[in-house]
Length: 417
Ligand code: ADP
Ligand code: ASP
Ligand code: MG
Image 1 (cartoon, protein in one colour):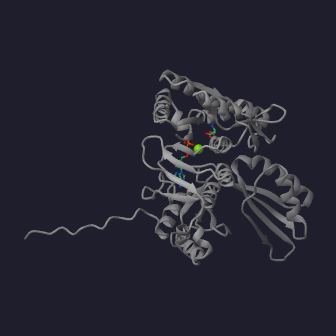
Image 2 (image 1 turned 135 degrees about the vertical axis):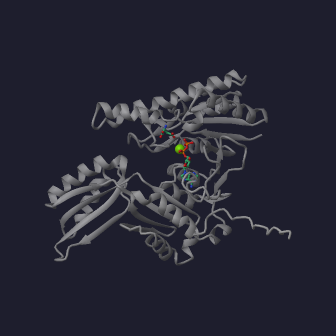
Image 3 (image 1 turned 45 degrees about the vertical axis):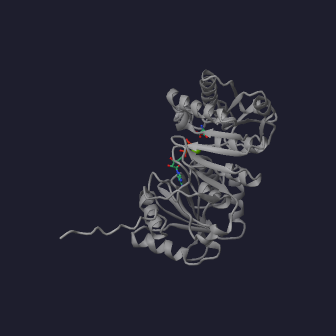
């Protein structure tokens, strides 16, 4: 019947009991005549624990060693899951990134997949064995272990699905699909039946961690249909697929927030050509992705303050580079602000509808939320606000754009007199 890639995240394999549940689900799917290829994350919380261990030993642990360390989490969960499946009478075998042939570049801790052979996966499927692949990891051409960035098992799943030409790639998690916003913050959030790759890409890159950005990128490029589903139930999930006409009718499809950004400001930079180029060249050479950039010119027009945001994980490196460049440029000083959050509204309908910006700014201001930075693209609008307003901002915008579950009309009860 079908060849299905199923990915289970950290919470789904967080204990022996949960691993047994995953094994049961996999075996049920196999018994229906399907072939299953599994991708698992490390047991919930394990990756964070390892990062804490490393940080307790070193101020800036070498990225290569971090990859060696962090990749061990997925080995444990994959081996345990393979044992649990075998216990239920279906042969199973764990495979590391290397054994699957996931070749990446050498950018440790956020490596990009260059190619993937998946020969052993195909062979196992042919022999009726369920392969359980360690998510989040690969190997460089020179045999160093790499990891694909936090949440990288989603990317492993999409990449494996495309390599073996799977019929479906199912991402099982603790929510039953992609919602109009994080249902853990807004209980009224509505589950989407389907969402375009492009919108999902924006939502993911703007903080909706339900799918990793690069897994969506990969799926879009190779036309892999992704389905986000619940590990608790058989409810239909959300299909991430190509854009269709219906999708454009909806102006705003979702709201994302990201609390893991830091704002860096370089103050008193001489206002002359080439300054921004020097700064951002230095930052990009360290593989750091800069998001928002704002430049303010001082009243006398001679100096400028440049602010930009980077992911918190890159803050240390970005600050070091900024300090160095600020010194070279004779700038006044460099400051960092961790107490920010980015709130974004996303929708392909924004291409053809106006008024989204006005509504967003008005809703935030009516609730006393000050906007520090703004950035836009064709299908998204983001504002940086103080972190303490994150949840409020998300709720307010969710309501303003009317994204909640449609309430059923309440029938008026006849009152007997
Ligand atoms: P896993 O461990 O299975 O990879 P994650 O924690 O990475 O799971 O992703 C699932 C979480 O994503 C949910 O618990 C939810 O809080 C969060 N989330 C954020 N935005 C959304 C959204 N728009 N729809 C669904 N979940 C979202
Ligand atoms: N274990 C890794 C993380 O916690 C990868 C993943 O869960 O997808 O980020
Ligand atoms: Mg995840």
